[in-house]
Image (cartoon, rainbow over the protein chains, first blue to last red):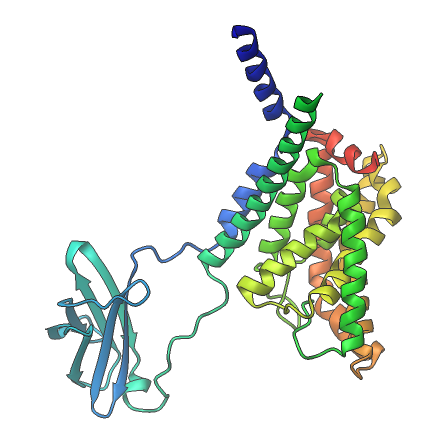
Amino acid sequence: MPGRMINIKRRKICLCRQVKTGPVLPIALILFFIVVPWANAHGIDIMAWVEGDRVLTESYFSRKIKVIDGHIKVYGPSGEQLMEGKTDANGIFSFKIPQETDLRIVLESAMGHRAEYVLKADEIMGKSLSKIRKKRGPGFYEVMAGIGLILGLMGLTLYLRNRKKKSATSSK
Amino acid sequence: MHISEGVLTAQVLGTGMALTAVGTAIGLKKVDYDRIPQVAILSAAFFVASLVHVPIGPANVHLILNGLMGVFLGWVAFPAILVGLILQALLFQFGGLTTLGVNTVIMAFPAVICFYAFRYGIRSRKPVVSISFSFLCGSGGILLAGLLLAFSLVFAGDHFIGVAKLVIIAHLPIMVIEGLVTAFAVKFLKRVKPEMLEAVYAR
């Protein structure tokens, strides 16, 4: 029995040594982190748009969970606070347009989550349509998903190969 | 260089798929299992490179790295580029699933051609020869890809010369950058891990 154990151990060491990536991996990683802009990590977001003479804001955590009782403060262009309020059960907070300038709307929720949205004066005066923020190209998650899938494919290939090798050696 | 859905005729799409199937089969046959990690890393680099936009010149174009893949992978560039393109189509909406075959041929075939055309020069012991051939391989991959792109658009009713000119002029900065990237990569690996280059040519 002890002899067998040693055999298994030895084989394991061999398998590890077969795969060599050399310096390519660290180089690829460094390149990757230079290239990919950092993701928005707080996972809370606020959106604002104009409807008639009111500004509507919607606050949500990542994806679709509404922020209830989130604390919202509205600031003018020079940083003075114009308005304050809380989001309702649907994550909505609306207020009458206080002045026709850029408005900085800041959302603060429990546990230090914070997000802000700047509503441009153009949008308030109706010169440009309020737009739903469009996704600008692929983000952090898409890139990570792709790299993960490629590495997963690599792992799968190597696993299948090793299993084939194992069954070949055990049938001998 | 990614052709979108609905541009090409069915015949071109079908031909592209068939050629990709053949190229991928040859590539998979040639791949050595010990080099799978290297193939995966290069495939990942190809996948990410399309996000590196170069705002020089008339059009906003991005890196492709097919010449570089040719140097290190040869025929194996086919499966590596195919995987990268599938993920780009699914995750980035670059190109499309029906044009996968054509796009793979456009990018992977130049890689193979450059591999065979420049391999002896790249392996040369003289650094000047090796570096200049690597540069040619990196930029030649883009040039040939541009020509193939224009050729596949001819069947959709475009003029070959017109499209080719447009694509190649837009990609001139990319050709220079990828030539330099390839030259540096070869120079670096020759110094640090020469057996990696030799492994490609062993088969």
